[in-house]
Length: 326
Ligand code: TXA
Ligand code: MG
Image (cartoon, rainbow, N blue to C red; front, top):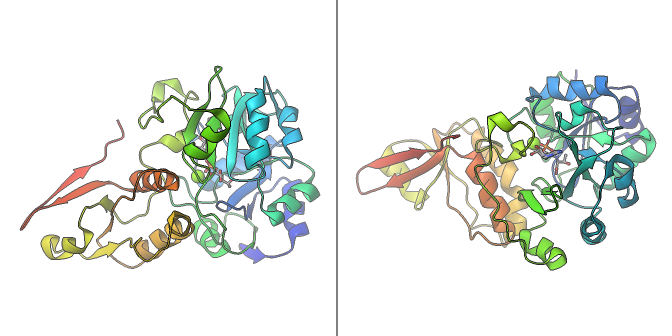
């Protein structure tokens, strides 16, 4: 059975042995494996039920390690790393051959991240290998932000979850691609577009919403899939969530952001609030968008992907407009 532990050496040993283990990072909990051991990496895909076309981020200790696993690195990567690493940002770069196709899902690129979490960094040091780690949820589900939430997702599938308390950020890293001579944000995250532009100058490419093309496996970031990070209870956007229960007759749970001071607090609580509502027996869950600037863009992005669409209310009736994945 799966045990929640606090001994860092046991977790590092598990990685060295070629097993996978739950690990805390500053963003969300990860499911870590030795990135240089294919047999270990396969276990990540199996335990999460993760589609093999979805590449896994490789976690390294220092910016100086970027060149061990990638090549053709533009200088701007080091400028960004100096500002935001260790921290919640992932750099997608052309991969070197020591990174296997399994980790990168057949792409010739690799996502590299330097986590700032001290416990995670200590595991990296003791394991003496880069660690491949996706979020520690079953594929398509909400990322866990506590060891107990990892246990709910992975009970019986892994031996250990290293407890590092609640993740200080609460949503996943910002993923930035430097392929094809461009800079593209593939996934919104805690480091905002505005933060990045302070270093890079204006990024003129709009972050596309619908770049998933099943025929061009690897050309996209599957974190951009329209339906992702989802609770089991249907979640809808709604302009007047408080009105919904009386009009629809459905037992309604509302994600209440009004109780938080700022977007950082919303981010910190977002996934755990969603999980709690999901476990409370509602027929549907509702949220209202927040302002789409700064961290608001990442929050709205996650909500949209977690959601099934929008519910429109009128005096005595309602209409649901479902998201589609096309
Ligand atoms: O904060 C995070 O990034 C967490 C913690 C554990 O580090 N990890 C995480 O991993 O969110 P995962 O696998 O759940 O999401 C990684 C995202 C996916 O959207 C994946 O497609 C994208 O990064 N990605 C990884 N390698 C890539 C590559 N070579 N090219 C394009 N996208 C890549
Ligand atoms: Mg994930």
